[in-house]
Amino acid sequence: MTLTRDGIAYRVAQELPEGSYVNLGVGIPILVANYLDPQKEIFLHSENGILGVGPRALRGQEDLDLISAGKGYCTLISGACLFDQTISFMMMRGGHLTHAVLGAIEVAANGDFANWRVPSQAVPGVGGAMDLAVGVPNTFVAMNHVTNKGQPKIVNRCTAPLTARQCVKRIFTDMAVIDVARDGLVLREVLPGLSPDEIQKNTEAPLKVAADCREIDVPMTFKGIQLRQ
Amino acid sequence: MIDKSLATCAEAVASVFDGATLMFGGFGNAGMPGRLIEALRAKGARDLVIISNGAGTGNFALGALFGDGCARKWIGSFPSPSAAQFRDRYLKGDVEIELVPQGTLVERIRCAGAGLGGFFTPTGAGTELAAGKETRVIDGREFLVEKPLSADFAFLKAHRGDRLGNLAYRGTMRNFNMVMATAAKVVVAEVDELVPVGALNPEDVHTPGIFVDHVVQVARHPRLLEVEARDEEKAS
Image (cartoon, rainbow over all chains, first blue to last red; front, side, top):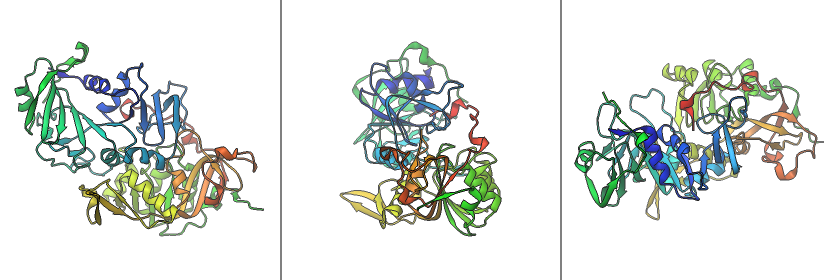
């Protein structure tokens, strides 16, 4: 049993404190938006010039000039602001956003990570991933723990083209929450039913088990069996 | 009297020459100068170098400009998976790619507009996009040396403009338009509405007219008046 994609997103959302300014990448990260605590004031950033992205626009109420980075029609929350790409990337690269949640192809024990190009991809595209990774103080990765083929994605050294070096602070997967510490990876939380040994078996890089390592606290609805080939 | 307004998009693109370097504003369809690009396609040009964040989608405007085979090189950050015409040209070897991280693209353009000779960025250091680039260690951190990026023409889209070239945007139209307005020899803006001088509140002018050479009022391209099909996976 592992966590569903929504389960990973739910767990990441618990990690974002009031006053966070957060950029969410495509894939599992964008699902985090669905689980933010409405009691907390948290601003979502979109690289094309929004701080305060709201829910997707309802059908029939789309504003053609208002889209988020994934090109979907969006809304703004109260207190949102709009700006151009120069200001937007100053927020990202300049360390003003507090959190970035990104997907990854691989994360290495030293916080290097790769998320922008799979080697088989015909046409390369990089977008804003590298700017977020180098600039945002809390760069989190949200991803499945292993590939579809069961290969570890948390590795000693990345083999896919790097997005940035030594920038990932915390990894949230369908099995565990892992911190990237100065001297290696620290297992902080495990999915109920899995042992630290089982997490290690699915992780290439060595894990140190935190003294206060505990179970991931997510509602039962997010725990499911994901079939792997 | 200063009058930067032009009657048609055809006039606005008439001086584009073969081999020219062009910037196009826009992120997705927001702030994309669809009519100007279509006028450029109608006029025809060859060996263009195109600077834009994405590489267009679908069978019109930027995507179709690549499909027409007008470009020999693209400098940008993110060709969408649906940029089929661009992909086909690239895979045939017709178009060269200079891939630039988005923030570096923005800042290279800003540098050109600001009269600077370059800048140091941590973005891309230690990655394959650093290949061939000069590096500099500042206070123990490695930076890439990046150079300014300018163009012969910049084609922009704004919501409202006046004959002085002052521009105002709405929603997420500002994106690359504001910075590109500063970095080309000839800057042309397509606007939904050309308003009399004084009608734009000075507090709400986003692009000062000094940066803009021509303004064309034109109804949006019909394809830019449709709500695009939803793809929940594209959500961001």
